[in-house]
Image 1 (tube, rainbow over the protein chains, first blue to last red):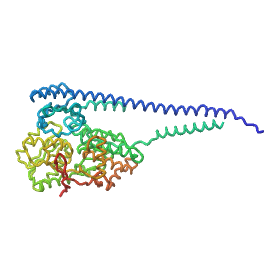
Image 2 (cartoon, rainbow over the protein chains, first blue to last red; image 1 turned 90 degrees about the vertical axis):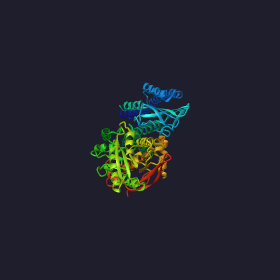
Image 3 (spheres, one colour; image 1 turned 30 degrees about the vertical axis):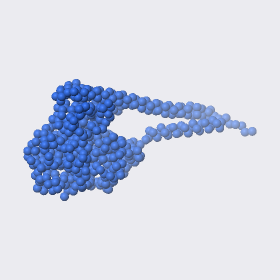
Length: 191
Length: 381
């Protein structure tokens, strides 16, 4: 009968090191790497979702406030003369810096009054003005799609409040603060 | 023993797969960086934003199809704010960031400023909508897919004098884009006068300043001109037309390709009905590829593409094919572009000449019912 040759001590140690130490360590390392990577991705995704939700909420509140203010201007316009509404629009515009401009359009949608006063825009036929026709309407007040204002260069939306007697009160609501906020977050993320 | 060996083999295979996955991820090929620069903020930003959107759409489409030379395209975007000094700064940033080429700028003035940086750096700049003849033959690394307006300005002058029989004209132009408007005015006026026409008055203004268009137009009205040519942006053209109407002044109105957008037709309202313009972009193009682009753009961005978006898109396509031939590298890109002939774009084909310019047709359109109606092709004769 052949005698089974026993392995040398070297071989035993090598096998133990490789199969019982190195290989399990490598497997554990791989599992940890994949696990950490997955966790980090999930965490980043959640953080970004949270940021987006927060921004969306703030924008929503900004728009809601703008709509409420313009609704008030509309109600006053429905019961006032053009001269009186001029004064009221001026006060609202000065008190609320988020509006770059407020327009009062008559029944033919001609610009009969605006704040701040700009003779270049007074009298213009704004019945087919770009941006007025598209947007979301809630309770009769329309918020247009965002656009870049020709007057200020800021990202802006129109808030359009129709009047009972015909015509509209239109506010140009500045969204520039959000652009700056997003730019700020981007540069923070880069660093 | 055999069970242990089997287990060990499975463990080794899993380890190898995992390692190769990790290593593969680390060795993923670097993306190809392409710069884009235009005015993305400020009063004239609409054109720059549309161009950016067009380029972005093309890049997304190219990346979805596998990228260029097996690498994804990465768009590095900068805003020149419509200012020459900023244009130089951001072009330098793009060059330092290692972009292989730059698509931009949106207007002539910023392009000329930016070329002072990119030309010495030997970085190709591809202009989507820059049309001033002042750029022809001056730069080795400048290309554009929009034709120089030298021929269209002459053709427009001929049309206005001979076909519209307008013999006394006033020209209003915006000095903020002087590289475009001043040069256009000069070429146009030269041809118009050669034909026998009289440029009664030339008025300039800066769109950045507060302007009194009423006073300007009232003074022109006194001179009893028979027509008005506006070399101004879409918004300014619309307002000028409306203010002329409010003054009770009804004369034939003309404008250039710069104003060819929905903003002109919508914000101009009734005041721009009958206004004629020359342009290189056909809005009612029925070619399949154009219609497909138009739909993709509207789905992606929620509004119809303007000429800026279309030319931005074409620029990205032309550049990506050229980069495919240089394996995504800057070296040799200029030569590949110079050899680009009969490249199929959204409307027809284009070929670069030795100056990096293209010859593409110009058209004449009129505004009717708040839309552009094509009248025909414009020639320089």
